[in-house]
Image (tube, rainbow, N blue to C red; front, side):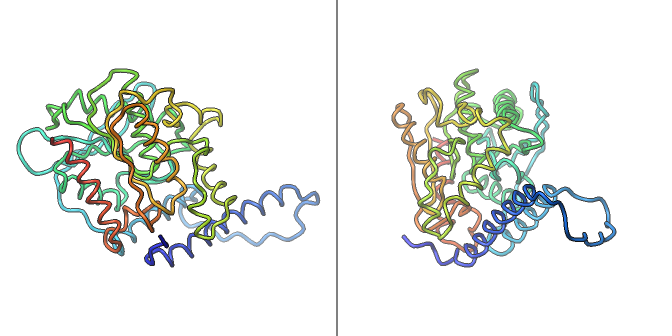
Length: 348
């Protein structure tokens, strides 16, 4: 199916960004190899106003501003719901903040431990579209959303995020009664890099304490950081060269992992686990014009082969960040409805 017209201008801007990134990297490499040093006079530096931000900090600030605009122009604001903030200790790693979104109603409710996306290096539970999405899913599905504000790379690298995720899961089960959560109806969910952590925590849980997880919902998941299951036909159809996409996706793994060899570890790449038996039922959503569609579909196949109740749905004509655009894109609204339907299974 052709790309939805909604994405036409976005694709043009995204292509320009990727080409600019690749060209900038190439220039730096060539300049480093230039044997004769600088031959031009540097321009005078303007006095700095306020503290100087690192390139990464500037990138994160720009990403937050972009996200704020996206919610206002093509997103859907979240409803007012009661929230509570908690700081969860993590053995051997920094503590992690968990925000609970509480649905209306009396008595303990089902809950889902949720992980945001952002390539392991940007994002957070305070991002406007992320917060709005959690609020809408909490209200529409009638479940407690326990949103995990895991640490970002490269300041903190794997396995810090996995340990934070599992500590949050253990805490949710241990404190369920006081939190208004039904401990027999808990699942996990995640988007993109967050889906990687959601899948990883089901493996850690199976291998350690074995809490009774009921469900995993994985949206556009990255499940193999070696890149072996990337489907670059998805972006080639958009006129983006293979080497540019591969370069961008490799940079994600380099940022998150302290060493390349760790990409083969199952908690980094859940698809590479020796066994996928005894994992919770899975609902996996992928997008047609997303190179990670191969990761999601291969993971669904691995779960089915291991006897796990798993389904995979590919949304046609859309891209990786489709869930954000509920204010402008019919497929995004359908995506939301399908996730809500999956989360309602926790009530059954």
